[in-house]
Length: 253
Length: 308
Image 1 (cartoon, chains in turn brown, blue):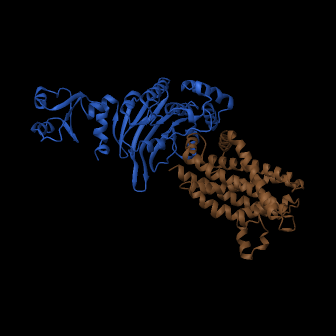
Image 2 (spheres, each protein chain N blue to C red; image 1 turned 60 degrees about the vertical axis):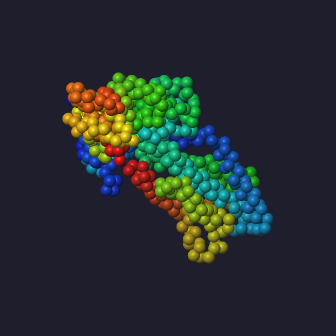
Image 3 (cartoon, one colour; image 1 turned 180 degrees about the vertical axis):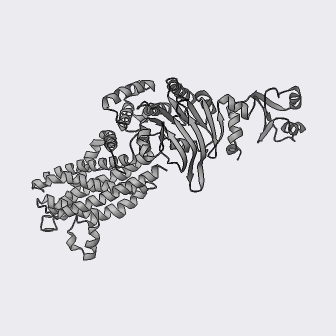
C-alpha cells in the first residue's frame, strides 16, 4: 500500500517525458493568472472598493495561487494519468518491473504536485510584478502550493482510478473543481454566505487552501491555520489510500 | 533435473463464474523455451499474466523463480523477469534510448550502467541508428524489437513474451524470431504465447495447447503431430453445387479419423495408411495430399473456435 523509492523513478519518468512540453506549460501557467487578475481583479475591482478589508486584486491574488495549484494537479492527475493508464499502457509496463501500484500512484501524485509547485512559482512572479504581495511570508506559498498539489492530485487519481473514459472527467471538473473554484472563498469572503452554505464550504478542500494562502500572502499566519493544513493532509492521505486500492483493483485483475 | 523456473499446479483464474484458466499444471525448465498455443480466449495470456504478477490467481499453486506467487514476493520475482506484453507500451514522448534508460531506472539500475546496457540493447535490437528517434517514427517491427530490448534491460532469468510478433509483416517477424533465437542460444529461459504455428514450431522446444482455459495437449512439435494427427493429411475439396459423390461417405467412414469443415473433408492418416485402395476411392475427386503439421493439431484440438 505504501510507496518505495520506485515512486521517485516514476516521478522521474514523468519529468523526462514532460521536459519537451515545458515551454507551452510555462506560457499557460503565466497567461492564466494574468488574465484573471486583469479581468476580475482590476476589471471587477474598479466597481468593488474593498473586499474583506483589502483592495480587490489583493484579496483575489492568494485565491488565484491556490486555484492554480488545484487546477494544475487536477489536470495532470486526471487527463494525464488516465492517458498513461489506458492509452499508453505506461502503468502496465511499469508494473512488469519491481515497481508496485503504490509506487506508480505515489509517483504520479508527486509529479502532479511538482507541476503545481512550478505553476505557483510562475503565478507568484506575476503577482509580485503587479505589486500585490509584500510580505516575505508569501514565499511560503511555494511549498504550500506543493501541498495543495498533493491533495488535489490524490483526489484526481481517485477519479482517474474509477473513470471509464475521458468523458467522466467532465463531471469531475464541473461538479467538483468548478464548484470549489466558485464557492471556496476565492472571489468573495465566505462570511457573506448563509451559515449552512458556510458549513458546506468548510468541507470543500479548496476552502482551506484559500484560507491558508490568504493568511500567508498577508504575512499574518496564525496557529489556527495548522488545523486547515491538517485537514488537507488528512483528506489527501485518505484519497491516496483509496486511489492506490482502486488502481490496484483495476490493473491487477 | 534442475529446479524449474516456473511451476504451476492446479492454477486457476475465475472471473465470476467463468474460469479463464481452469486448473492448469506445467513447468518450465531452465534454458527451455515453452510455448502456449491456443485460439483467442483460450487462457494463454491470463496464464502468463499470472506468472508475471499481473493477475492474482484464484486457486492453485504457482512458483516463479523458486518463489511462491504472493504479493510480498512480487518485487523479488519481477526483478528477475523480462516481460513483453501484447499491447504496445513504449513511452511515446521519449526517444528510443530514453525508453531503455528510464525503464532501467525502475529496476534500480544506476544511470551509468543503464546507459551502457541501453547501448548494447539498441545494437541487439538493430536500432543503433535510431537511438535518438521518437517512438512515433518507428515501424511496427522496430517498436516490437524495442519492447524486446526493453524487457532485457535487467538481464532477466525468465523472459515472458505475449504474442511477440502478432501484427508484424513476415520480414519483421523473422527478425524478431532471429533475436529470440539468439537469446535462447545464450541460455535465457523463455515462456511465450502465440497463435502462429510457424512461430511455435520455429522457437519452442516444447508446446502446450490450451483451449477454454485447459491444457488439451503438451509435447514437442513432432510428438504432437504424431500423437494427434499421424503422418499425412488428405484434403478433399467438395463441390457445393453438385450432388455428393458416394465415395465421400466411404472416405469419411474409412479406418482413419476424418473431419468435415464446410466443403473440405480432411482425412488424417497414420504412417502406411495411404494405400492403393484409398487412392482408388479418391479417383475423380479434387484433393491434395500433404504432411501433417502443427496446424492440423491445432485445428483438431482447438478448432471449434473456427467451426462455431
